[in-house]
Amino acid sequence: AKIRGQNLNLPGVQRRPSFVIRKVDLEGQGLLANQVFDFAGTAHNLTNDPDLVEYPTSFDLRAQGLQHFHVVCIIDRKGGNALDLLEISCPDLILPARILGSPDSIQLAMEEGSHLQVKLKLQLMGDSLKGDISFQHSQAEFEVTQIHELAGGEKVLAQMNRGLKNLSSFVSNVSIKGKLGDYSMNCETDFGQKFAERINYRLTAQSESMVSQWQTQLQRVFDAKMKTLDEQLIPRFEELTSQFKQEKSNVAGMAPAKRSR
Image 1 (cartoon, rainbow, N blue to C red):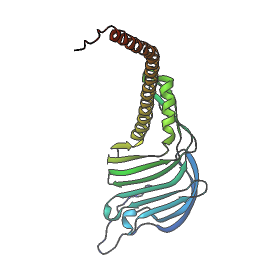
Image 2: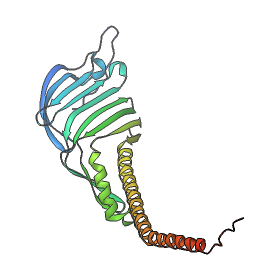
Image 3: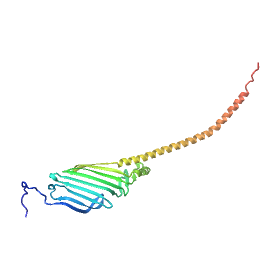
């Protein structure tokens, strides 16, 4: 039969939760970055009436082994206010190979085995959401696998790959703000700047090298032409000098003798 009635708050009687579990040990599995983890941890103050408990409900979970991460979750309903906090820390994730970019412009292959450090912190107060996520990549290796012909084709591709040898780390940050059902995400990364710097440096160095080679080649051509010119002019100059001396001697012999007084 359906239970009929109404709960009444009697003066002087403090409401209490139906049950509270102060501490419980947890074990299980989770999925993060497309990888399955076995985890263990503890939960505190589990209850069906969180607004009646003086301490918030919390979870503290860790996974260790080949991969490690730490998750802290707090659910606070004291005084009828809803506050949720979630923090995730992954100090060293090993990533699989990935393809970045587009074959219509430029396509990069990120080799398997790069390292990723993740820090996530989210706060939900009522339905207002805000948070930050940080991705720090290290020991990364890249290869340009395809580039549009209008951007330089195979020759530029080879130069890009030489420039990418020094690009092994970059940082990406994501900020979240808004309502739970309508929030915005702002993403920033220094990968594009580092990529452009290394590629521009490499292509500039190549251009400077080509200009230097052209200058050297032109100098060699000029020196060779001048040598040929010298070889042609010096004998002729010497011949003209000899003729001039001979003519001068002849003219001197034709001069009239001086009269004596």
